[in-house]
Each structure stands twice: as C-alpha cells, then as structure tokens.
Image (cartoon, rainbow, N blue to C red):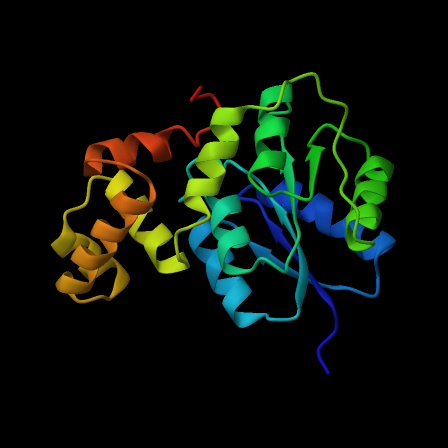
Length: 212
C-alpha cells in the first residue's frame, strides 16, 4: 500500500526545498514527490498514481502561464491543484480559480498560511486570498472550450502554439502524422478557431500578463 503523496512542482531548488521542509513538518504522513518542469510534472503524475494534491508554480520551464494547470486538471481531474506563485495579482488569482485550481498561495505567504491553505484543500475545500478582480466571462468561455480537449489534443495544441508543423508534432509526441492532422482538425473545431495561428493566440492568452 503506497502512502498518500504530495507533488511539489517548482523549478527553483531552494524554494522547493523550503516547501518540502514545511510539508514534512506539518504533514508527516505524506510522502513527497518533486518536479522542476512541465515535462517532469507529467512524468511524476504518471509514475505516482497515489498523488493526492499538486502544489504548482505557474512559471516553470515548458509551461505557458496556466497551461500546466489546465493540463493537470484535464488529465487528472480528481487531483486538486494549488497554485503557488510570486505573481499574486488579483487577476492572476481569479484566472487560476476559473481555470480549475483548488487554491492559490502567494510565495510571500508565511508557513502557517501555507499550512492552513493545504489543510483546507486536503479537507475538500478551496482556499484563495481575498480578491478584487471581477470574474471574467472571456476566461470562463476559454476554460469551457479548452475543457473539451482530450489530454492528447491539449499536448498537440501546445505544440501548435510553439509553431511546430504536423510532422514535427508527430515526432515530438510519438504519433503518426495523420493522427496529428485529425487532432488539429478536432482542436480547431472545438476551440472555434479558423486557423492554427488563431489557436496559438488562444494559448498565448493563457499567459499571466495577457488580457483576453
């Protein structure tokens, strides 16, 4: 029987170590798994089905703003994700909430605040700092459209946003080129986009400082 596990995904080793130290003191019954990029986050989730919560930094290599959050929520909807970020602007917090995060902890928060937030989320609640930002209907509509994509289609979409051709996407994801073509057609239809460029612009809008 594997112990319940928490996954800490952050590319800064010192901050990751500080978070892990707090977790081991406050939640000693949990094992800890680490990831330092969007790619290793995906690998860790595949390798550790016992993960019960993800602590996720938005600014990691391989992530575009909220893309890692959306990817985890799409592929592992049963696992709550708590964003931990140095960008704690009200709009960023609101977008994290609308894109499916169960909580948001500013990196400047003291350890007891972080502990209280994690206790709340592990108990099935949400935890967010007070926010002044209004709910964005554009964000809500984008989240709904992206939620229609399968995990594989989401991976293809991120490759589109990087400007890769179908042949390159096929090589990157280990797919047949014809399969990529089918995915691209489905993605454009689900996102109501008329071109690959328009789909790439949608991905760009996931970045923290972008307005829709």
